[in-house]
Picture: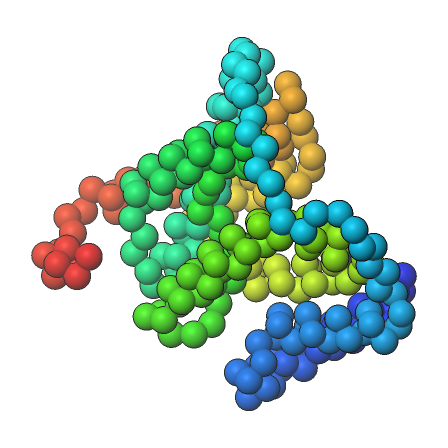
Amino acid sequence: VSTQANPVVAVPMVAAFLILTAIPALGRFLPPVLGTLVVGCLAVAASGQFSFQGGGPILATPVFTVPEFTWAAQLELVVPLAVTVLFVQNGQGIAVLRAAGHHPPVNVFAIASGAFSLLNACCGAVSACVTGPTNALMTSSGTRQRQYTAAVVFGVLAMACALLAPALTRLMLATPREFILALGGIAMLRALQQAFVTAFATAFTLGSLVTFVVTISGLSLFNIHPAFWGLVSGYVVSRLLERADHSRSSRDDDEPVPATVRRRR
């Protein structure tokens, strides 16, 4: 985010995040991201940059979409989305949860993603998945035994935002661009930090790097999203150049799990 474009809004938000993060006592009283949101709203209001346009619907109305099956959609959407959801999105979410000390049910997540994606498709919505950034935010603070409350609150807020989508969209469009960019960037800092630590801390670092670079490069072949090509490129490079890591991982998988660990799981 460029603070020069709108320093009146961006600078106070960055300062609030740094102060609340640097002083743990304040951070426990007011979470850094929430404090950033409050300071940003005050800065926008004080600078007179809030221009809300009234009128229009408040509640969202579902629009049911009749499916149209084509071979082009199967190749360009179904296969890449299935791979992306199961391996990229769910993989990130499961890795984040395991890094936080949880034991997520992988098969249940995969089945639930498919079932809810089928329901979402009736209204033209996005695929359902276990996202890494969202789980990283929910597991970034608090005791592990109480982190489930963040998921409950997130689910309730997500449903509320979905119902109030028209009003919230107009509300966000009434704020300056720098407010959205600063808030989104700051909220993603811890999630990105956890993602990088998970990807580059141990093995398969080259494959992770290639996946990341290809994904953010915007490479799109045959109208297929870069995330798919990033996953394919990273896997191929890892298989070719990180054979020692794969061999070590295979040996670890073949080792028997102690009985105490099985009982604890």
